[in-house]
Length: 195
Image (cartoon, rainbow, N blue to C red; front, side, top):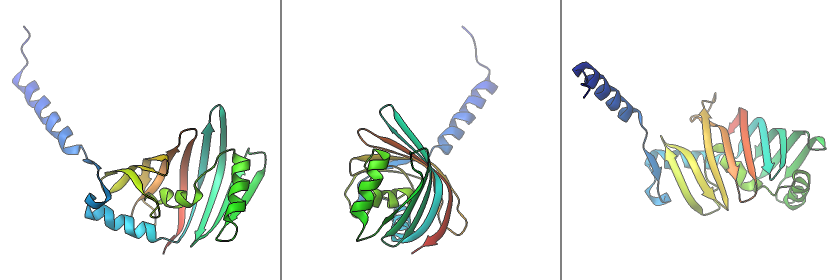
């Protein structure tokens, strides 16, 4: 039988305790039981009516895959969404507001081959649930949204980054999945942030 030296036992004990200290608690709680810090963050981000983001989006549906550069300019209920890439359209823009959303959504769906819940993506991109819809499940890690299920979509947050002028780190990489489509967003920059 091989003996383990006392120093080796001590090193294993120290490394085990350090690993335990580094782990971050994961919370999957009903909305009423969420931590106060998360509730404050959520309230601030859901109130933002103005922001610009730029990045890339990858849409996978069955064997089909589309990759495009995305420009999202949110102003209250008005959205200017620009996509540029191999979508058979070069660069295109859509305008969403209270009078034109249905037509713009239909055209976007036709071009992409996918129905995206644009009104909810506005909030999901910021790292918060859509306040107008019921939340099926939510997982919080270190006061940031780690995963969310809402409106038949599962959203996972893969990376956050500090943003100049923002009080909170904002999502940099996220993945949205429904029963037949997966969307990956890579956000390069955030601008014009606020209520």
